[in-house]
Image (cartoon, rainbow, N blue to C red; front, top):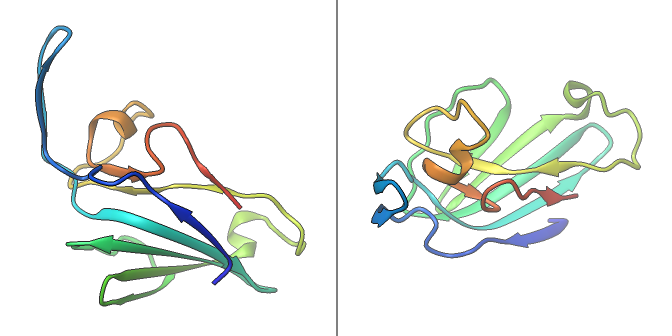
Length: 122
């Protein structure tokens, strides 16, 4: 399947450390995403995440497949206003037991791939 993107390891491990301004603790990471893939055809963009020790709650009606240690998600190009075969797309896998409300939450809650404000480019 298309392009492959690797992620840093141990991003979903619980965090508990002393830092500037006090103690920081977070155990909302759920799935350790180790590899992402992305491909497209005439109608859909398909992404795949390989993960370790995961649980998923489906919160959308998009086409998906969950099997062994892989989660595959299909997104119709029309939902992203993409009509051509030549396009650019940035994407991120984000996972947490809590909701991401602010961009800063990518630094402090759960796990995302790639880390922080970085994105994969497809």
